[in-house]
Length: 146
Image (cartoon, rainbow, N blue to C red; front, side, top):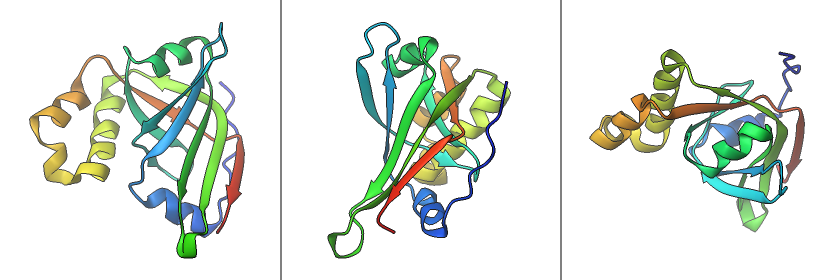
């Protein structure tokens, strides 16, 4: 599998990605090409965006036939000046429980806190056999604001 070169991001973008903001992930069905956009929790590791998802979701069904996605994080910004980042690229879906459970837990902790991620619901999501990780290494980056 070819891995694209890591993209160097401006510090304000890295700061934006560090915040536990709700992002949006766009997928498209291979046959109908109908776009599908959903809110997602994510984690940025400096190279890739990680998203926890379940096999039964539409986004996962779309990714089976078409791994191309768009991912956006944006905020209103200071003085109502919007700023954000849009990533495009092809994703890798990871099913290995040894990778899925710890990364999913990390994502849940980011949004729910450590105690929230240990609650029965989120704790069970991390180890659910249907849980998968979506890993996006951006190939194209578009930004606004800053």
